[in-house]
Amino acid sequence: MLDQRLLPDDEVVVELRSAAEVAEAIRSMVVRGAPAIGIAAAYGYALAAERGEDLDEAYRVLADSRPTAVNLAWALEEMRSDPTPERARAIHADEVERCRRMAAHAATLLAPGTRALTHCNAGGLATGGYGSAVGALRAAWERDLLVHVWVGETRPLLQGARLTAWELEALGVPHAVIADSAAGSLMAAGEVDAVVAGADRIAANGDTANKIGTYSLAVLAKHHGIPLYIVAPTSTLDPHAGSGADIPIEQRDPGEVTTRFAAHNPAFDVTPGDLVAAIVTEVGVHRAPYEASLPAPARAAT
Ligand code: MRU
Image (cartoon, rainbow, N blue to C red; front, side, top):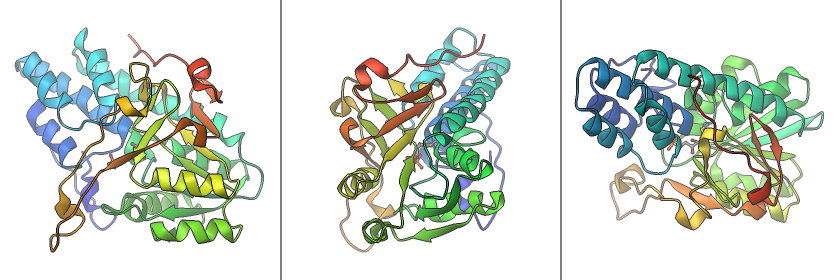
């Protein structure tokens, strides 16, 4: 795996040799982003099967590595009946294909000349390839609909400033990294036409867990009359979560915020569905009421 903690300065590939090592890579964010976590878990489970590891233990250690992204549990369930490398590769290929399809749907929501704001990293690094929210921006750029992307730096681990900026630079998409706290004044100045973000888990009513700070952007966007679009594969839908109250929020090491003082470090927040203008999956564009419009979660190819 490419160690995402070291980007953009160093491109280091780490080798993982057991389910426990894959779980630790997920926990420590060598790999991160909801679909990529699911894909990594699928490979980890296949690795465990190939090595003759106890599969119940492999399932447990992988499932426990991070709590919020439902893709992790989804991918492990998909692997249970067929714990082979071929199955893991199929899950990986399907996720990338889902990204391409949702990106094409999402691009239809953006008008020519769009200046978009995105948060965290929902690009190819986060999805195993192509990207969800960044995939949408990429598709919009290729269709001459997008002119600029504001990239929220995404405190405390800087997924925006390190990863999304790196990806947009490689794609040749004009962009500028902003301090997270700059979003409101940019919106007030009329410099943001749409907020486009990914998701880690979407409840049946459209409440969406995503990187901490997404909720603040949603409130700001609502105040300024700017649409917030969530772009995510159906593997991120959790029909068992009726609302955001059912979504576990990961609390990470306070030392990621500051080692000098007491700190508090929730890694995700929940944006209520009524602040989301549309949720875009590979199936299409879904609008409120989400209980009626959201499709069923994907099933892996057999
Ligand atoms: O803590 P992270 O970096 O795993 O959080 C990732 C996000 O919040 C992404 O926005 C989300 O997983 C969507 S990725 C396509």
